[in-house]
Image 1 (cartoon, helix red, strand yellow):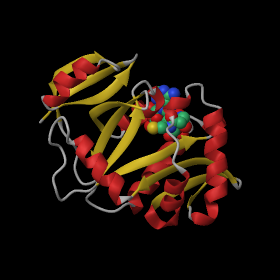
Image 2: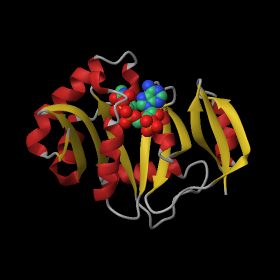
Image 3: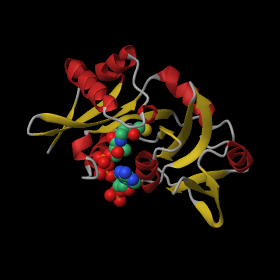
Length: 212
Ligand SMILES: CC(C)(COP(=O)(O)OP(=O)(O)OC[C@H]1O[C@@H](n2cnc3c(N)ncnc32)[C@H](O)[C@@H]1OP(=O)(O)O)[C@@H](O)C(=O)NCCC(=O)NCCS
């Protein structure tokens, strides 16, 4: 297995990979596809995209998107319930996470994540935008200390916004834990405003704890 930094010359390969993998998803809304111009911008030094290859075959992708406009939108969203991200820390999307359906649960997304963090900008806040029933993705990010800080229904899809600072861990009070249904917007509304964050996902329930 080899991990490579991709660029605009890989556009067709990346585009075809996402289309084929989205087609194979049971729940297509679990992966919100890039607009073509955003994907081109990302591959043309507007971010970093890494590809995992098995004997030359593309089997996984992950990226960090440095687009400034989107960064501003994300920052407003992640601070909309409770103030989490200071003015001088930019928020960038951890995006495009997809592993070939025949290579899942083999640690591919984890390896891409570790490699991306090593070459990412320092002192930033990463934000993953995940459908609220997407068990694989939510578990993946929660296990890496991402915290769910915002929920929003857009285009009919239930999106959760999970953040992680690259230079510090968001500590929580375990004693404050409460479990809520992953689509219970009124529970989110009440708890997120009080500084609770989501930290775990199991059986369509999210464990919410207050940040310290
Ligand atoms: C989410 C996804 C990228 C994970 O990729 P992967 O290469 O299979 O992930 P890994 O093997 O590196 O697993 C890493 C962690 O994710 C978690 N995970 C992966 N699949 C899971 C599943 N089906 N259920 C629960 N947890 C899962 C595991 O907890 C694993 O934990 P570990 O680090 O303790 O082993 C993959 O399932 C996928 O491509 N899904 C479809 C596209 C998608 O939903 N993308 C996310 C959009 S936000």
